Length: 122
Image (cartoon, rainbow, N blue to C red; front, side):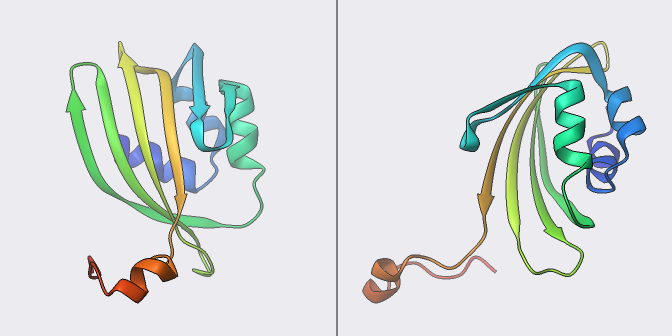
């Protein structure tokens, strides 16, 4: 499965293309907001979300039938920034399950900045 193309279709909010990646009984969990979606609901959540999106897959790992991706996601105006870690289970070249963890990008909390610990990754 081409996960770079999968993410491209997600970011372009291409509903028809997104559907083709999934088994009809697949499910998607967004753990940070405690949401469980079927494929149709997932497509609505992605494709009806306002704005135009962009991003880049930063890392892909494969473990048996599981892919792990880390993707930087942002609106095209770059007004926000997110990272999503996705655990994508694939059987017979179809996604059967996704568990995702979304995080808002930002600066470290004040208490850590005040302690002068850590440094920027980039």
